[in-house]
Image 1 (cartoon, helix red, strand yellow):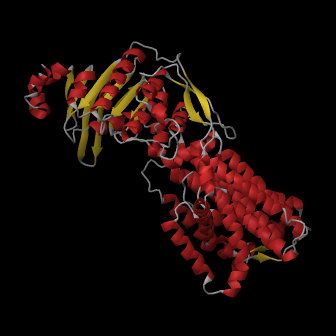
Image 2 (cartoon, rainbow, N blue to C red; image 1 turned 135 degrees about the vertical axis):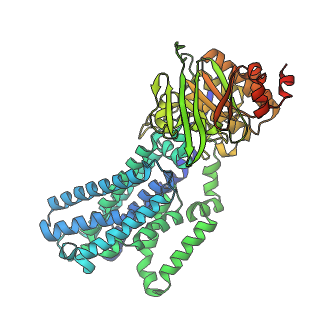
Image 3 (cartoon, rainbow, N blue to C red; image 1 turned 180 degrees about the vertical axis):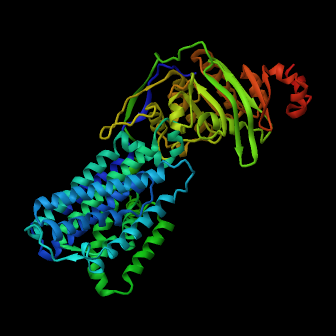
Length: 602
């Protein structure tokens, strides 16, 4: 086994930050260079293009980095535009009025987004990933109809136009819009290259795993969704302040769809790409609408469909990779930073059971998956739960790790009831769960996956990228014993099946749980890998005083490492004892193990 005091290596900066930063520098120079020599028409057109560029890059944060497909951009943009228009037409066309309108737009957009987030992200029901897309699509349609029905307040189908605005030249507006775009892009790139940006990508990759790592993902998603939509509302107010035109078309499906087209054309999760696509398409639209008025929108839609089908990374990243420039940034080896291994972390032994299950039942309609199951688990105990398929093993594990799963009964972890709490709250009590199929973060490196696990549910720094962390001894032993060191800087999707299983186990142990639930951890592993996993688990139970609950079909493996075995049949607890005690039970042999098993363990 590798030396536990050896430093672990992790990528100091990932490739995701290199290409956008390079392109961003090019874009900044391109925007600023001609700022003094533009005519009124072109500068005015580019002001609008820059505003839409900000809307596109903000939408890319929501969709590309957090994985939320949203059509809310037009509704939020419209909230800002109409807030400014109503203020200038009906109240006060002054700088103070503009500031109040922007603040009101930000507040309303934030509240609406929070309400949508509460409906979508905090629901106990399992929702489709397209649920939010449908909700936001409906919100955009509803807002579009609302501005038509409110008469003189919003101007109905005619909108609001021709009101007084700030006395600035188009060149001045251009400078303000360009500065807003560059500042927005800089802040976005800074956040997305930080620890918080890493967390966002983890949620996008595998939200369930995040929740079982104690991360309260609904709060993170709602906060990011609300802040981004508030910024889009501010851009709507800026647009209305510049153009002095607020029309119902600003809140229709056309804008919502165009924003998504810009993101997919420019490349999801690139920030710079969607902004560039928005600027280029917006700047080219007047000319193309004149030369091909009947075909322009259809052509844009066709490009979008083809991009989704054949260029899932987006047009810009694909082109750059094709010419080789992107690949040079992509393939560059990152610098490495030291990761230390902690030696001070150990669970208190305590006196009572670390896990208590009392009369737990689970019903699926009229079907009873579990019926009055009761048992307790002590620290330093490796309990294997066995039984035929459909016995209720996975149902019991789900009840332990998610307070909303059981139909009745009581479960305590360390003397504290898990109540009806979601997995992130149960994990915070000390329950770590490994799934049957390795649940990791596909696009993140092994090191980044481990780093997220060590946060133990805490929200990381918004602007800083940490390069050092301390691994708990249990996690470090898995990393070294199962050879994760050799793939430390490799994306989780590119490592072997056995390494993925080991990675998930190490992530679970990095949280320092008091109860570890392992659902067939050796599934698909070689004999050598099974042996190594068994040895590691036995050592951890003995040295770290962990309570391990194991679901496993390999009885030789169970016999070798278990201190206790529980047999479930048809959702009921049939037997509880040592391997020999369970195997010697005639009832168990007849129900599950078979008469020859007693002879195999003798």
